[in-house]
Length: 618
Image 1 (tube, one colour):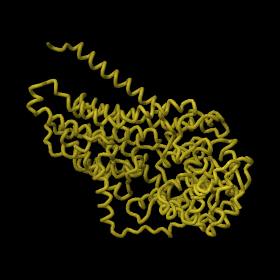
Image 2 (tube, one colour):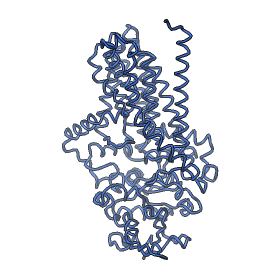
Image 3 (cartoon, one colour):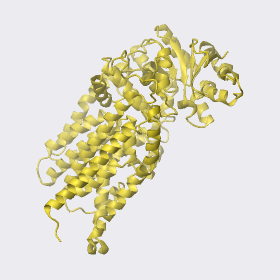
Image 4 (cartoon, one colour):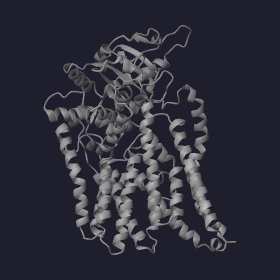
């Protein structure tokens, strides 16, 4: 029995309709049922920068990294204001796009109550806006990859890749985090689409200048979204210089295309930080440094944290091996994606398919080298994750390779019904993690929907920061400053300037004194699970040094609380006011306000009226 064209068309329409139905269900479910708010420091930091841009304040930030202030102070040769502080850490494109959205919906108005949290809300409304923008980029990236893979292979492989992307838990996690990875995925996918067009032209003996340059435009935008993607662009430039005629001219043109905006950005960074690479360059401490990025960002004097590059080769090899051993999680858990590397050994008949994979490999090698230099961890939301950008195209090559081997099996050749079994198995295995976690997450989300949703607690609890009546935003005035172990959350949710808590008393008092001289005094210190929930006590003590007693104070108070009728929190033992390291600081901020007992405590310089919850500690 032959299959008619109308039957074939009906089958395609049904499959595509089912795909789009699942896409809509997953999108709405993730954004309105499962969404718990932003949960990445870098995402919150970029979000609050976007709001400042929307307000007309330029690329300024309310999250102050002590080392960034130290850079700015040296560049200006004087004390720099903590307000309208220029950010030189983040790449500009993602904040600019989010700023346009925030401006469009009126979220730039600080006095407006439209986007403030209601009494029964647990998730900040603007978190959902930021996540929605990121999710739209993800959905567009699925479409671009479908078009690309259909052009390289066929609609079947492209459809399987689209399904694997849709059911990839890692892609959804990044979409809902607010990090720029989904914008990066979209730009990278557009870039390699035109790279393939250029490869096609070169394989057919035609000049590939136009598509190659268009690809360079997208890689330039990619570099303006995350500085580390410059490494990907470098890999492409080298490939273009070798593979496209006229030799070298295309590569040089793309290099100039990337350098033009980069020069303007570096001039701005140099003006505000004294370094053309700004504060972003210090992420090098994550990879090749002798400490961590967080440690260097919290120091008030960069000279006390010199970059020691002893054993440079061994450090690069160690970080590279880490990437190799965890390549499947880095590629979104899509098990067929690493088969791309094996497919390099297969002689594809079409020259464009065979040649294109070498451009992907070269870009990936340079990306891996960049991550070896600047560091990448097993954190499921590592902001330096670039492997994920390669997952769709590597998956396509992996599936194509498996399909070729599968079709050569005698049992498959003699039984056409088995022709697509391997694709079904791959989809089932890759979709299993999301499918298993969804039912429980949906039940929890629906159960808590009437209670304002489920926040990302610990460590983030937006209501106590955003409230103007019973939260940090209402207690701290516009021209006051808060020290905190989660300054990104204070800047985003409370809309107040916040300094990342330094590890040393001297650093704290230095910034405190400068703030007082500038008539922008410090109002208090906020401690959250971002510090005391970050690891073992030994690690906490190493990271927070002089402030260890303050960081652990809430937990100790709970441990010594008598739990008897009529007891109040002051009956528990307080340790921060007994620590000689910070005795003076404890006296200046003696009033404890429990925001979330016992994990989130605000130490204020004045009594906050609420007799049931606060106490004077000394």
